[in-house]
Image 1: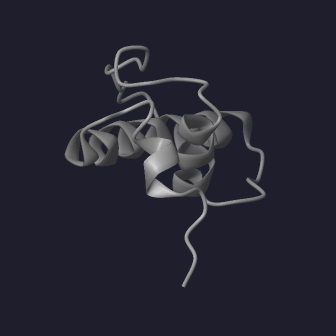
Image 2: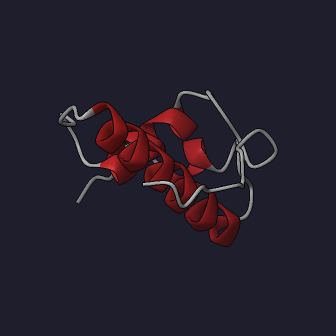
Length: 72
């Protein structure tokens, strides 16, 4: 089974796998909240979108906003 993106590509931006899970989960929640506020459907699941953002180098563990608002 081939995973995309490959784990070694993801670890270039977030070297710790456990931190990666945390960062991706936080970003996925942010994506879901933004989509819900705008009332727009997502083409893919929020986790998939978040993983792809990490793989593209759009953000890393230092650049993600760790504050998640409860205003949903």
